[in-house]
Structures are given as structure tokens and as C-alpha cells.
Image (cartoon, rainbow, N blue to C red; front, side, top):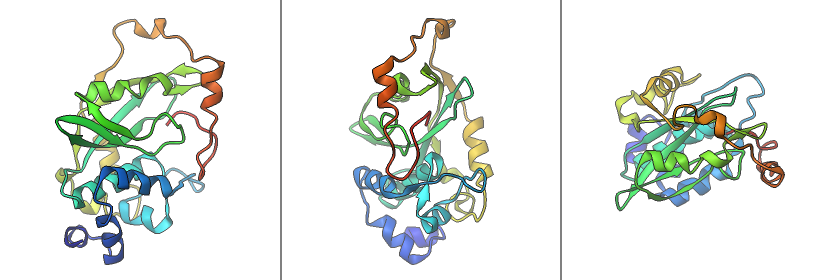
Length: 213
């Protein structure tokens, strides 16, 4: 809790996050938040603002998860995944167990959520999202970033910032990214089939029909 207060969180919010302690509990917590439908326009809310609203979309949930990991004694790491064909990027919070990577993730899609820590590299982890990262039945995931350590950023820019967290979002976008597909690989991708497409219509309890991230 003391670290949370030092980061600028009000004590009740610091206590709330500090009690989560494990990636599994943090994932359950971000799942419990309503999906932020951005009714008044695009948002990238800080941890404090998202928690006050009780809702978050993927990057906002990633901020919350990273902060929870930091309070639990782990580095607050994010990874950005870039999409093509007009689809949206997806951001996850990273953690490691026994040398392997896992991810905490909030998404409309039932297939773009939590990843157990079994992946030996960030490439392996990002590839686990590839098959169902789709828009209009086309697979759209194209890049993944290096791990981005939020300890490099003033907490006032992502833990307590009152508005759109432009600095962190821009830094994630500008971070080094690696291409997933080989040259010309786009042409050989098979669209998902009817059953896969129907499964992607499952609904988040707090949101709308799934699409992209």
C-alpha cells in the first residue's frame, strides 16, 4: 500500500490494488471492470481515473494490471501488439514465472485475454494471440513490441494523470516493434471459418460483441 500512495493513488485505491498480489487475482480484477465504451470519445485513462469510473478498455486495464504487479513487487511491464487492415492495437501487461512470459489482458474477444506464463519469448507470447486476432474474418496481428517498463515514466503520466495519457500511449507506439509475418506472408493467410467467426461473437459481460481487441 505504501508504494501505491507514493505513486499518488488515494489510500483506498492503493489498498484495493495491493491486496491482489498475484497475476491471477489481477486478471480477475480487471475482468470485473466494465468495458469502457468511450461514449464521449477516445480515452486512455490513468489507473486512478479508470478505477474511479469502474471501467476500462485494453490499454487502461493494462495500466491497472501493471500498477498491481508493481505493488506486488514485480516490474510494471507492457507490450504493444500492432494490427493491420484498420484493426486496433492491443496492449497487455507482462509478467514472468520460471523464466517464461505470461500476460494480463482485457479484451472483448474471449481469445485475447490472460496468458499463462509458459512462453519462452515475447514472440512466442504474441503468436498465441495471432489466430483469433481478426477483423472481418481476416487475421490482422502484425507486430509486437519490446517490453516497456513503466518505471521509466513519471507515475503522474499514467497512474494519476487526469486526462488522456498521451505520453505513455505515444511511447508504446514508438517502442521498437518486431514483424510477425515473413515477407509476403500476408497473402498466404487463411480467413477464419464460420465456426471461428461465430465464437468471436461471444459478448463481454460489460461490453458489446467482440471484434479485434
